Amino acid sequence: MESLSFQGAIPSILIVDDDEVIRLLLHQFLEGAGYHVVDAEDGYQALDKIVEGRFDLVILDIAMPGIDGPGVCEQIRTSMDNPPPVLMITALDDEENVNRSFKVGAVDYIRKPIRWSVLKNRISYIIGSYRSKLALKNLSTNYELILDTAANGICGLDKDHKISYINPAAQKMLGYDREELIGRDYRDIFRPSLPGTDKFDVDCCPFFSDTDNWSSIHFDEIRLLRKDGSCFPADCRSTPILQDKQLAGGVIVFQDITERQQAAELIRYMANHDSLTNLPNRNYFQKRLPQAISLAKRYKRQLFLLFIDLDRFKPINDTYGHGVGDKVLMEVARRLKSMLRSSDSVCRLGGDEFVILLESTDTIEGTEYVARKTIDLLNRPVKVNDHICSIGASVGISVFPDDSQDAETMLRHGDIAMYQAKEKGRNCWVWYKKQT
Image (tube, rainbow, N blue to C red; front, top):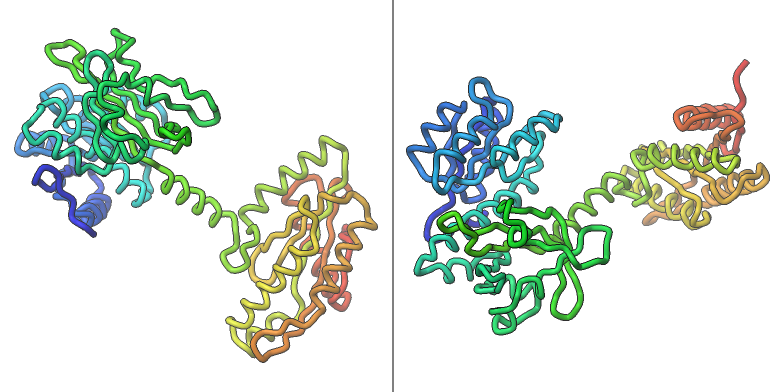
């Protein structure tokens, strides 16, 4: 990985966790990302190391023996003039500890098990924000040169709410030239919209109007307007600048999270779709079927499920190999998808098992038509390379509410009926019937 540097120094991170394995994993990951890393195994050791060195970030485990994470964080925040930001890591799932951590000054938290890509981006953003804030407060001679190289958008504000500094990254994201921004009221440029609304009227620096609360504010996701009227999703943090206990200005640090959202959407898609056929998978179906049953209950309709298992598929894998078998499955998925209406859905449960959920019909005749068409389509030979593969399908049908009252039962009854179809001679469909 590319080494990170800022103002000529590699960012330094203190890891505090009583779990030796977690410390080792964090140490290796962060060193690989270009950071200087120091470890501490408990709160007392952490406080000693804070005195000995300068850190750009402290990563604290919330639950530790002795002084816990929030306790360490509170001592760091109250004993230093410019304390490093504190990022909490926790395996706990209770709001009390999370709220306590924020109350004593933690800037963010992340849950175990750690998602490393999320942690990497979160750390980069926090350290960038922290160092940008220090640079603005210190007003050092190389202040603008440092900020100009930052990947985050950074905007400095004076006490009159006017933009006094804007870095190139911010100009590029917003679509303005520097001359168009300097001296403008920040509210003319930064008019965020919260997720789910089209009102671009959020004040991203409320500390200018609320004299009783000069606190930083963080928006995980807002939309910012560009000069041309288009918008982009952003992670945005605004921080007041205090001098002699008076508000002297503020800093807005933001980043375009379009790629992050796209990556999250891809992860969600992959979690709900089969990687081979691109059909929805079992995970998706287990969420979709209860929803469909709920709708059927509301409108007092029948709901039909077709459980499909391919006939003669195993010999194809055994004879021609899994590469040919995979292509057969892809063709099966294409055929099944092509014959259904948009309101129906087909999923691959795994292996050579598929399921069709019919929501476009609530009649026996319509369901048998789909079952017949399914078998007809899958009886057609599949040509893969120089091989002609002949398969077929056994189909079991279950019905809500006739034989099933819930999703688990409906899927199980479809599976039972499918095996009854195989016992009947394969290449046919069977309605579920309770065994006597």
